[in-house]
Image 1 (cartoon, helix red, strand yellow):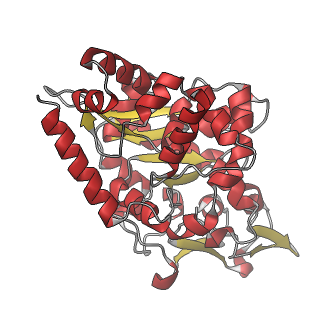
Image 2 (tube, one colour):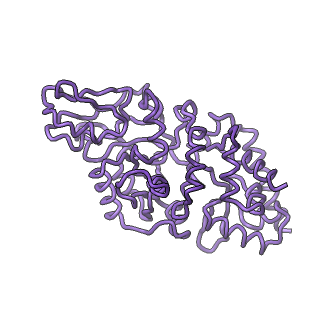
Image 3 (cartoon, helix red, strand yellow):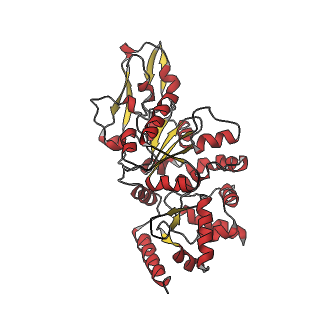
Length: 375
């Protein structure tokens, strides 16, 4: 019976836009057993992507309200479900994707065993055919690499994304923390993960990060550039987070690095170009590139555009300005959804989930349960 609840939860998570695909080894079930108690798994099955009050979830789960409230609070604190807290209103709870979601919220409580299971599961999570059509992250250039004459949208500039938010929290990078848990990875800065708005509230409320000012967040971006970290916000014009990633530790970048054409699977609006006559052969760009897109041939930098993801790290430290960024043709760019919710729905549709009829039924069920929960 216990094993059955984890199988049902795995299917439930796989029906969410982010996905939780099954494997032959069943490693995904081992992960769920490490994270959820059987009772927590049962309650998680009663949550959808629609935020709902505890009274609604309690009715659906056939639990007393007080018990449901306590369990939901505990599950939020463990990073297993999402919650929205508004002033003068009860919290509203919803299901979390495994990635981006449950996994990222395990920061500061990783174990070697959980990390080993995640490593085994990672190839199943990075299905690049789906990712190419509906990515969860996108790559934007570091600010120092953007020339003044290049037309750039606000949502393509990390600094503008930061300035558009008042509530900002910085947290440790789950990926670098993950690799260090098993004695691997790099020594690049750890506290670099930026969250905004309600996502920032979640991190702060559950002790996963600390609030910082806009100025401090802008300094994190400068630190990321110096350390050679790729900026990856959520794939939405109104970003809810910015990850500062390295090719040694980041699950997405590690997987993309093994792909023969990373540029074809990671969403980016730019690519680098080199003016051979200006290159002095210093090789700084080869050390900065996280995708091995730059090589030195006869002391001149040569770019492999199939591997270039337009992060701008090679541009920002080129001493002779031989490297610069250009915008991809419109046909080669992935459209950026207005917000994270629409981005998730888009990913769900690409995966064959969240059809219109399914969404309508979910909304109707939620309305009925809300009405009945008043009785």
